[in-house]
Length: 89
Image (tube, rainbow, N blue to C red; front, side):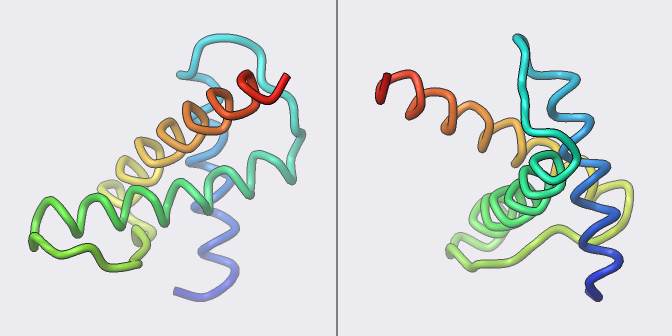
């Protein structure tokens, strides 16, 4: 997937995940983009693990299913980030 598709998928997935996840998240446009791209990798890897039985570092593609997987991955990434950040404070 080319870089423009990664940016679009990251923005869409990050924005949807921030809207779904309870509480206030900061980070702006760049934080949303990074969250979405991380979510695409987390979601794609978990989807690969569930469907094939082996863990592979893959990412979701730019499609409806890919956006859903990336959003779920971004929600997981948000949960892990805030759990670690809360413990550090």
